[in-house]
Length: 140
Image (cartoon, rainbow, N blue to C red):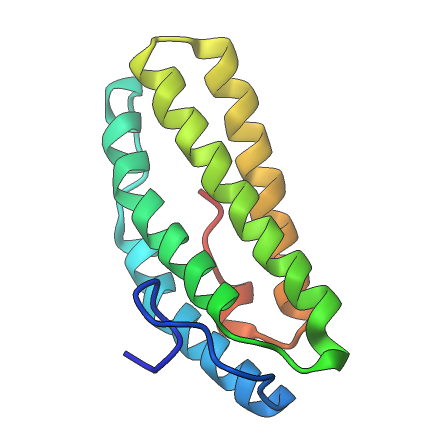
């Protein structure tokens, strides 16, 4: 794993160059994205909990990895927005998981909509930041 890319790694000490930051974030997404895409989508309500349980740690690892990398000043605002959007995906996925366990279809429906919106925001921020591997992430 690249230094600074995992949740166990300490944050880098200073800002990376734009090229270094993009390279590291793209590498992280290129590693995690295929793992997310390999998780079979649920075809029945009974499969939702296992799907969400499988993708939560992957999205969280991506969020933590991107958060650990210090972007250069010119990318800082959009990079922060990318991390926030990844966080919103994770929050919504947790809410999907909880609402599924509680058999709360209305809350789950709302959380699914929020996860989709947050994932679209991740894709948009990734495109703006020129992170093609991150822009290809599957919407949960």
